[in-house]
Length: 553
Ligand code: F6P
Image (cartoon, rainbow, N blue to C red; front, side, top):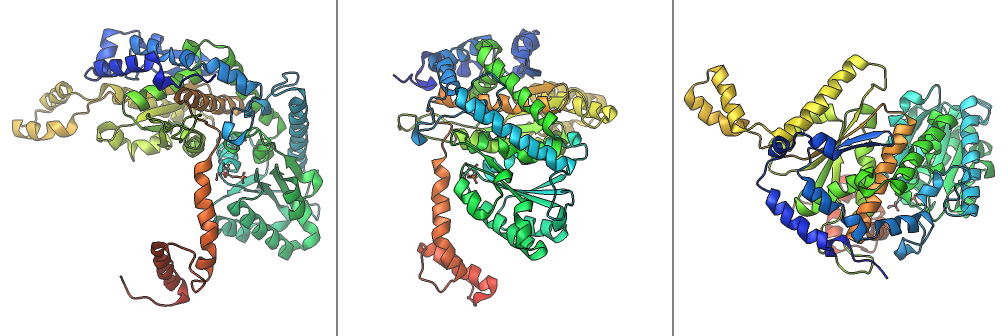
């Protein structure tokens, strides 16, 4: 029997009442009442320190939030996932990304899955090391210096984010570039300067049927044929997919093919051979360390009580902000430029997973699911959109990510990043109340009329909730822990909201319509396949594309 979702639990209605109780209490007042908030609302485990003391909640709220995992039988769902039950009910699939990072003897998903995962990982890492050492080389024996990873969505965002995040661990590995968007310009820019002899293409696609990826892969293959001849192609293409037949017919050499399984959801697939570009970039040892970091977070998620469990805490804070405090967006703000692509990665992970509005039983949900994720590197963001975060009428919840040490050894400048992150978190929380503004005017000796005019503009109300996620340094295990932290957060929220976090039916309609429209885009005179409004737009675009002329509307 299925457990009712969190919004049907007794704790949920109590949380509603607490939200009303706290609405008029600024967070800074909660700090005045309880100077031990840091101790109370921060947790250190699995190499991370999460400080949630600036969230707009108190112990009573925290207590009720901690009832939610019990109310929805989170432990039961978590174990169901770990044991390979088909928790992705609409696709009738197991969801076993945790099996991808298992160590020998863990039997996650069963003995067969463990064996297959370890074998495939070993093959993939041997390939990566072969390329890095020059043992696996191009058709004329030249070393691969340039890797072009072709993929999109879950087959792109993870490797692209991680290769950038761990660039300082490359130690002589090939340059890895990523091609995803369908317009083709990125690939054409890359090919314009690539040396075909030293270029390796990776085609990463779970299905091997994705328009963008296959289009790019064909263009790249054609380019290579023209440059080096047909015989060279198999030496310059590797691929990762579930679809062996498609890899075959594309012409990928069996030794350069890597396996994926149906039970890996694309946006959780970085740990598999989809991460081959990361392995090429940082090498086998660092890739293993990345997996080990995730494994550490897995063990923590499975063993720690809810009140100490980092992914669960992040999930509960998110539920509090989204469902009770009307904060539908989460800005992800890393104070480490190398994590610049983390917000985009988390957009897919969180919004692709929990952007659903029916329960597992197919009933419409009456509560909000999933935050809108956005963000960017902290310092840049401070000089860009933080103005809105401090004083704008739309309000957002914030995750500030903060390594203690510099990833490039520039500790002096990194100190500035630490000061900035902590200062901003504090400013978001305290705000700048009228009394402080007036005291500043007093000191400046400002004329009364000027004071009156300026005061409302300078006041910051504060109580903008942020969570600080700190860790010693951005390295492979730390990145593994961080990503697994967010994965388990997403899973926990999905269970609380009573939805299936692992399907993605919503993206299919647009793909189908694009297929139907393509003939009319290519030949505007073709039998119209589009709705009237779309057809009219197509005519205008066709005129601009050189296919005729139109009068202005
Ligand atoms: O359109 C969404 C999606 O299906 C994602 O779930 C997936 O990660 C992406 O497209 C790419 O799919 P594939 O890996 O099969 O090319």
